[in-house]
Image 1 (tube, rainbow, N blue to C red):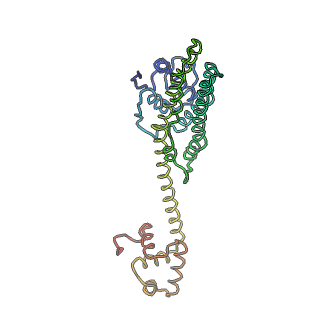
Image 2 (image 1 turned 90 degrees about the vertical axis):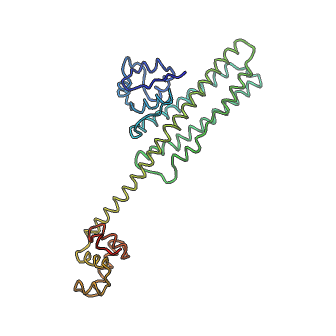
Image 3 (image 1 turned 180 degrees about the horizontal axis):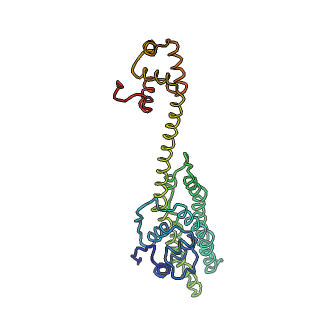
Length: 318
């Protein structure tokens, strides 16, 4: 039964491990080394350059299913990605080969069913490696690009989410075959039972890993994407305003007068009479205005004049 305690930064790290021994592997994925004495979670995390808030968010979720971090912006995405990457390395480089070796040691290679079990395990290992390698190749680099302010037009976390399926079907099938197959030989039976226990733990770990990705990682990256899009819009608006400001500064006072007259609905001849210039000069001013502002319509000039305070909106006939 799960420990229904919400761990906090001032709790001693040793208490977390004593209550939940399966956190030992998680510590390694965060890059936290043992030998921390009686230090608190905060002291251990800060001493080993791990974000405390993110560490506790994953730990409390993994232990009790708590997903009550109050501010997604406080989660360190770099810490989260580091944790997921290290978890992949642990699973691919250690856990999969470890279980296969135990299977080989506990099975009779001359037995056809034993060879089938190994084949089934190798197929499962192949699937899980491909799944994790995809994340290494596509998902994590995409997140890195988001963090550096470079959004992608061809990929998003929703693409990953839709294809984030469990790959443990073969593992469940493997467990069932082993349970039915347990040999009568006492030594092999004991070895295979121990291996089966490891497979159950492996399945539980993989299930928890997938839940962290689905319930924490994917939502947080969605939030980052939304912020990135908002920032992109803000940058574009700022750029437009900057261009408009520069354009306003390059307009002559006479060109501004012409814009105001156009907004007031005057014809070229009326503008010429109003400003005491020739009609040809008005036409020249309007060409220069269009070139500088890249605005060619009276409606566009009206909007420009209002935004840049050349006219008051209350004086414009809309």
